[in-house]
Length: 350
Ligand SMILES: [Mn+2]
Image (tube, rainbow, N blue to C red; front, side, top):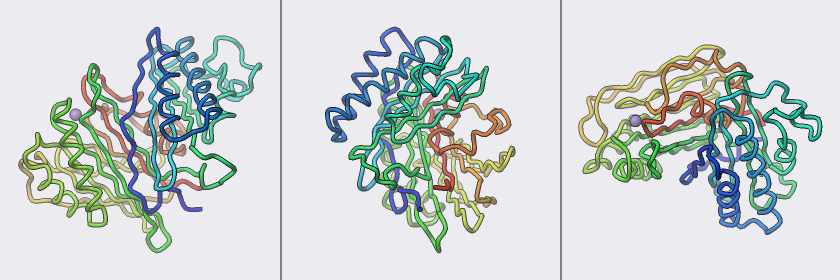
């Protein structure tokens, strides 16, 4: 089955980030209910989402050293979901299997209540490294009802988080997935607007609009269009990468400091970008090529994530869902002193 985002421009609206503090439970519950109602869920489904999010919040409060919940609406052409990510930096879950069975979890593990979240979510996934941290994904589609396509996994996921103290994020992303000659092709754009706050966010918003209008072109042509559209803004670092999973090729065109890489096995292969500021001054553009295999993962991230991560630090992570990979990397490598943005794509077997 094709991923459900084929033929669609994939974006997610602003993420509500809730840091671990004393009022996490009630605030998370309220935000979850607001988003669930917005996508048209029934009252009973809203209640289930509220309950699951409250469980996740309680888990963080009781057991995590540091962490946050991210809540947002994810939209496909014909449906929408509320998505929850719970990200923490430890201590990790020693025994995931028993954590998922209610009543079996020993007290003092993060897993208490996780079984309830798993049962009510349409998609549930948890990745945990004992000693370092956990990423939990729960997705609740509106209009659920045994529809297999409704629970299939999108091939691409992006996530942004504003610098501490800001509510808007200057990093923005957009992606388009399509089938070409039977193979999955993902085109992804990540934009880091200079500085932070509303003016940086405006540059990213322009970049997203220009991407939507030009996503069928080559990465280099897309970047050229973005450069024109960002004139008069603060400017930005931008990369556009296209991964063709059946041909085994990736091409990338970028200006400024966006990290683009392909993870294959335990290795990370970087694709270069050029110096400059999109919207102000760009050099003669160049496209860089790389190789993919069907299980490779394409990652784009801004300098709001440390560059010093290695796939070997996260055993098994790059075989997980794109949203889990994006969430865990941002949670583990993200910095608080800058806007952070990441986009992850892989050809998920579904
Ligand atoms: Mn930045």
